[in-house]
Length: 431
Image (cartoon, rainbow, N blue to C red; front, top):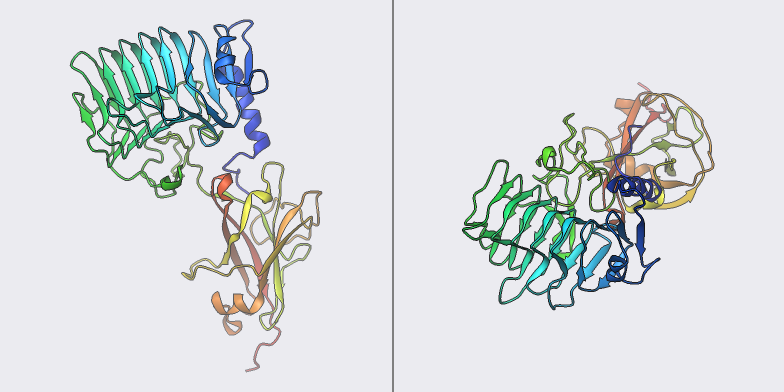
């Protein structure tokens, strides 16, 4: 099996721990967690010192927060951690600060600004979804004033009056972000500001740029989010944002996306890893281990049988079969356009062990202590749908392909695995 293209919860948590440790190199720096150490984000910020990390676990926090110089505020991921302004005031304030970072949040439902940066420098805003900041005045996802050296990368701005509004500010860098359905403009600045705007996607904003110029790498097309109507900003497999960002714009410490998946990743499988635009890093298809007729070798199939064919999707140390949505599973055959055959039932049981050999090699390995996903397919459904003609393929070894998706709460990522059957000659007509 090829390397798994996503992280399970255990591995993701390990990556986040290593990542969090890498963010701060200040001697004596601490990680303060919310709500473990303090019940609110602001309470944790108030008790923090330069170099500290305020780590916010999954949940929705109804707060208006103000950051301090020298700290990092990290959410568990924009898909699970939200700061909600309740429709009033700005949600996050960065006033008179230096060297601050905020990332890994959905920031929503504020007035005037989702994040207001004022008289500050060396600010980084990354891996966030900033949405629904609407007000009759500014209503900006990020309001940026009298500040310099602000980096905004790998964010999603959607449903705001403005995505970003900048005034009397310098050295603003906006990269690898997606701006969609903002009611007035995606990015606006006054005549005294300067911004570098490159490798972003602009789609269906009332206006894109005002008093600012586009740099290289920007695109103007539908990002193809998984389900934006329900706030799912994962990228679909066909998204034009996959591998279209700029690696040079990614801070050295930004090694995960908005849900803990690795960033930067070769999402289009062309051999070159390039960061995606937006908060999500698309991981492509997860290649899983499957075993047809577990414990059997060489997986014989009698096409005259009225019974079922058992196929197991195997759990491994870094892949949990409980993440799969069994209702999305289909069994197909290479080269055939029919969508495939669905299982009639499924269960979880330990029946097989991952095999290190080549596809169609013979093995009869049994359980390994991990619960596998076992699926039952009607043999005659396979015969009819996959054109398994006994006269043509008797005695042959035929690869079958199992496809499906993870559950929606696990990102809905596609999965695929292959194993082989050997067609028995039983029942073949005599010539």
